[in-house]
Amino acid sequence: MSLTKAEHDVLCNWIKDNLVQVKSFNDNSNSYVLKHIFERTDIGFYVDNDDFKTAMTDCGFSVKNPDAENWVFNISKKSPALKR
Image (cartoon, rainbow, N blue to C red; front, side):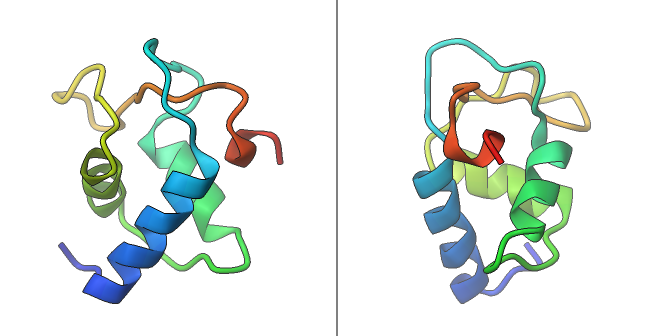
């Protein structure tokens, strides 16, 4: 992990505040797309894809296919981060 603990905490707080868990997977927004949404926020900073994937699983999100390069998670299409 290339993030500091403080950066990881900021990212996890953003995930918890802006991404809503659901039972189904959202194929429209993968880890690469989501990390760029975070990076463009007021509190955002560069996050590599692997660090973003780790933070998402640390926050309790499920992964559709862990063998994929860009992971798809169980997030609502109505999540605040996706409405921007």
